[in-house]
Length: 528
Image (cartoon, rainbow, N blue to C red; front, top):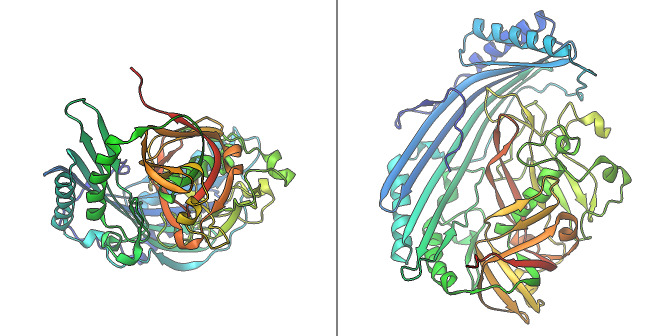
């Protein structure tokens, strides 16, 4: 599960202070690049000076398996020269080195221009001068002693094993991106971005049969500080089936309940394939949103410019232009944003210096928009970018990446428990697990962590071997109810891959519990 830590990353002593570099120095470096690029003929230049800090603490049962503590620091320079993009990067942070790197980017742009069929067309973007943005954290995770983190994970493992688990892996991921952006538009933007992901996996083995079951953490990766793993009762949703979590996560409690639930899961009956009404918790919904809505509304996939990892998209421009394409039922309202507090995608400005915002993708079930960056906005007739540009490291060129994509809560007062009371034959699914989706983001299959059978409005026990199958349009049109905002929670991906060579980004997907009628359920048990 260890991610890419960035080009030229160096190992850092655990006790090294994480003080940010001086902004005045970074501005001098940026100005050197802007001046050099302009002198060689660039008509546009942006400079990204990035310091990427990563810490991962990995344990298994009563042992520490690994502690990774790295820093990657350098500058990426992107230009338009003779109407074409050029890009170059360096980790030598001197004015002379950065000026030469800018000149190289211009030379590359001019070479690329020989293959142009039409010049790059950038949406206009005003300069913001010197501005800054920080993730609103309460406790910097990098300032918490590693011993405290190790003690937490080992206590989680111990609790899970005492509650019945046989094997436990637990991990804490921490990321701090210190990003400085400057452009020939007149922006000098300093951002300090923090992310955290606590997670674990518990395994229970039946020694007589060799059968085993697993339970993953019900945490969500978040754009927060260490406060996310300081429990708070007001952020717990307590049901008869499980404790679920909003903006704070109790890792120790979840490990204990996870091991207990595994014993129940081991004894659960195998599902009978057929049509069921599904009640999907946000801990399951986020992945379905990510794969069936987030990726297919990326404009580069729609246009066929991008097909790596997730294919292209069935949501072609003709469907959007019609203004009537029925993506889902009238209950389905899906927005894109880079603003939600605590979300992984929350930043003040994207990697093109565009101030972030929010917009509708699906409104009352109808496809109304996509996700764009500056050189795509004109394709949709937009006067400005939607702020979806991102690079995972200073050494990589920025390109279109997914913002937060979330299902809006229902407008009427409705709880998940009230929703379940109206289901005659259904399954309530908590947590995410395996998935499969085709290269047009249309036909798919998803599973979960825990499945509860619903009969005549009541949960009657746990099921096993469940996966739901559908196609994107059919599935979202089967949505008949969504719980209100009291149940709204964020899930997300810490390492969403895209591009070739691969880049990873972090993105959140919010929802409240939702009901989908008449969805096909298959039995995933291996038949011998």
